[in-house]
Amino acid sequence: MLLPAEVVRQRVAELAEEIDRHYGWRDVLVVVVLKGAFVLAADLIRSLRAPVEIEFVRLESYGDAMFSSRQVRLTSEIGRSVEGRRVLIVEDIIDTGWSLAFLTGYLADRGASDVKICALLDKPARREVTLEPDFVGFVIPDVFVVGYGIDYAESYRGLPDVCVMTESE
Ligand code: IMP
Ligand code: MG
Image (tube, rainbow, N blue to C red):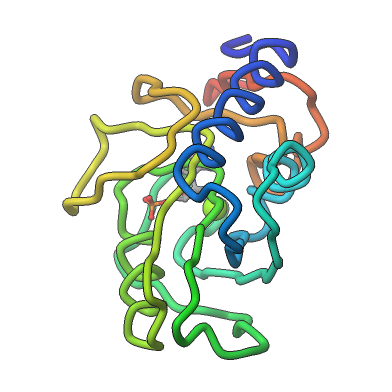
C-alpha cells in the first residue's frame, strides 16, 4: 500500500483548504476528468467553501496498457460554455502531462478566464511536457497505482487505499 485511506482523506481536506484560500468565496467551475478523478472530486467538493458547479469530461489517451500515448482528445464534451469562467480541473494522476496539457489548452481556447489544476497524484519523473499543477495531493515515484478511483484495466477503482500495482499481479 502506498497511501492508506486515512492519509488520503487528511490530504484531500488540506487540498480543499488550499483551494479555498486561493478562490475565497468566488465561484468556480470544477471540471472532473473521468473516470479516475470521480472519487477525489466527490470528496473534494464536499470540503470546499467556494460555490462550485461541476462538469465532467472524458479524455482518450490511455488504454489498458501501462503507457500513455501522446494523442489526446475529448470523448465527451463539456455541455456548456466555459467562456469567462474560472475553471479548476480535477484529475487523478499527472503522468507524462499530455492529457492535462491538452485539456488546459482546450479550456483556454474556449475562453476560460483562468484554468487551474488539482491532481491527487503527480509523477514528475515521467513528465514529457512542461506542466505545473497548482494543487497536488502527493508527489509519487514512477510506480503504477490503483485505488481511490484509479484503475488498472477498469478494475480496482473501489479500493479505499492507493496501492502500487506490480506487473506480476
Ligand atoms: P498523462 O497524459 O500521461 O499525464 O496521463 C495521465 C493519465 O494516465 C491519468 O489520468 C491516468 O488515467 C493514467 N495514469 C497515469 N499513471 C497511472 C497509474 O499509475 N495508474 C493508473 N492510471 C494512470
Ligand atoms: Mg485519467
